[in-house]
Amino acid sequence: MIAREANFDGLVGLTHHYAGLSFGNEASTRNQLQPSNPRLAAKQGLLKMKALADMGYVQGVIPPHERPNLPLLRQLGFSGSDEQVLARAAQQAPQLLSAASSASAMWVANAATVSPSADSADGRVHFTVANLNNKFHRAIEAPETADLLRAIFRDPQHFSVHDALPPVALFGDEGAANHNRFGANYGDAGVQLFVYGREGQPHGVAPSRYPARQTREASEAVARLHQLDSARTLFAQQNPAVIDQGVFHNDVIAVSNQQLFFCHEQAFVDQPRLLQQLAQRVAGFEAIVVPADRVSVADAVQTYLFNSQLLQHPAGGMLLVLPEESRQHAGVWRYLTEQVERGGLLRELRVFDLRESMCNGGGPACLRLRVVLTEAERQALNPAVLMNDRLFATLNDWVDRHYRDRLTQADLADPHLLREGREALDELTRLLDLGSVYAFQR
Image (cartoon, rainbow, N blue to C red; front, top):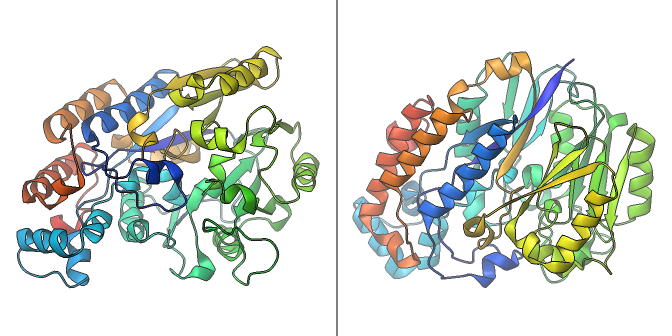
């Protein structure tokens, strides 16, 4: 069956700020308490979406979550009017207010794990919402993520959106950021690779500095929910040593598309065996394994070389979508240029300025959720979220009217910010034909 890969990017929310909430994500920690520019962040993301849509890729938008999350703050004991809740949280527990205001849902690579209909026994596209239970500010996202995905992929004949796994350490799940799919054609049954950082019952080598967020048990549960063929499903452990160097998700050290696997030589435990397994299962498999003496793990984390998008090039081979930081690093850019010049599967490099997202620890791959769709499935999703000239102009105008161009942690207590956000999201649900997906609308 003929199918295409679509990319659905998260639209940056109005409360995008730098709070350093994500321990293990070094960019997040490094830029803590610096002022942010939510308007610029949203526009940088929209420019990437529009550029890819103009190149012929199927490109969609996933809306932001409502923030600050007032019901959460009330659940934590802050009472009174909305204004009083914000003021009391800011005075008594500013880090909780920051967590309840985080725009981290913009990184939709962590929204869910996705399996296409060609791989699922029931012939539907399956989504399992990630519980993200390793970080408080992200663990609160799952219910709203499920509502948004169901408002976009709303035909149960074609799509199945599963709720998040139990939010306990045994089933720590970080979504598509730890998932790869291989195969020659999108519409044919593929090979799915689930990457985990630890097993729930610890044994063997484990990271000692930073947490391993994804468990093998969670990955296995997602594979069962998606009704995958065990012969076409692989599980591999991420190298604990690179987790301790800031590789908090697998998409910071590896990326794949179809037959190509682009990864660092230190990405996995027993990496030669994994590559051999993939070569045996994927026709035409090719691995570009980056040696540490060309690009160190530290440089990969700094530049987000692997947090890139590998897209099928119109002329054959692959296009690599990178953040500007990769071009600015002489050694990384030299290596990439050599790869293109040698004439393998990697054909072209495309660079985007995503500085606002990068300063909070998210590159091009963090911002998108990959969904392989047949034409019937594409017709069955909510068409209002698909990027085109009209939607690009509409959303840019919407951002200009509603977003601030400077935000600090102190601004989160401003009740005007809460009202601005609700007015903006209420309008956005009409623009994207989402219905009443936010709690304040019900």
